[in-house]
Length: 239
Image 1 (cartoon, one colour):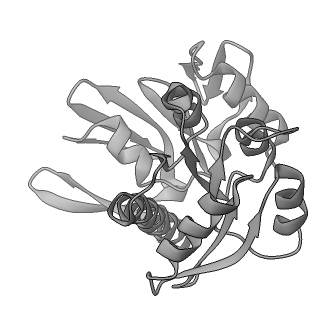
Image 2 (cartoon, one colour):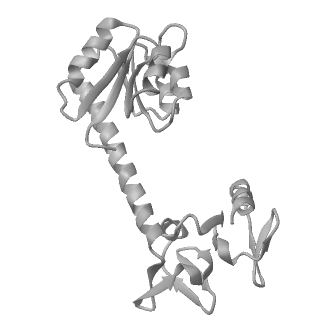
Image 3 (tube, helix red, strand yellow):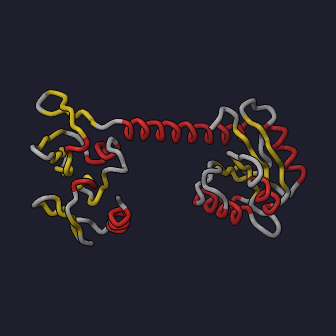
C-alpha cells in the first residue's frame, strides 16, 4: 500500500457525505476517490478504482451497509458510520476497523484513521517478516549455552515439552527452551505444518499418513481434532 490511503464514502444522506469529505480533506495522507449514495453505486466504484478504506453507513435503502460489507474483498477495510448504536456488535464481527456514531467529529474520525494506519502497519510488518523467513533456509536456536544453526531441510519434526521443545533432526535431537508457538512463527509455512498442540512436522519428511496420524520413519505423530481438517487438506494438495 502506498503512503496515500484511498477512501470511499458511502452514505445515502448528502449532509453526512459532505461532513466526512470535509473532515478527510484536512488529512494529507487521505484521498477521497469517490462518494456514493448507495451500496450498488459503491459496488461499481470499487470495481473501477483502487480503494483501501470505506466509510460506510449501515442503514441504507435496498442494500444495507452490513450486507455490502459482507460481499466485498476483505482487503478493503471498513469504518462504519451510523446513528445507531445497536449495530456495533455486527460491525465489529465483520472485522471493521472502527464504528463511528453520528454526528462524527473530526477528532473522533482521526482516531478511526489512526486505528486503520496502525493495523495496516502491523500487517505490513508481519508480511515482511514472513518474506524474510521464506528467503532463509535456517534458524539459530540456543542450546547448551550456545547458538546452534539448524537448516530447515534437516528438521523432521518438533515436539513440545512444556517450556522446552525438542527438535528432531535427521541425525540428532536438539532441546531448546522455547515455546512451540514461537518456533512455529519462525518456520516457513510452505514447508512446515502444525498437526497437534505439541507437534509441528516438516512436510518433506512425511512418509505416510492417515486421518489420525503421520509416519516419519519409525515415529507416529498424532493429528489432533483441532488441526485435522487443515492438515489433511494441505497434505492432499501438497506437491
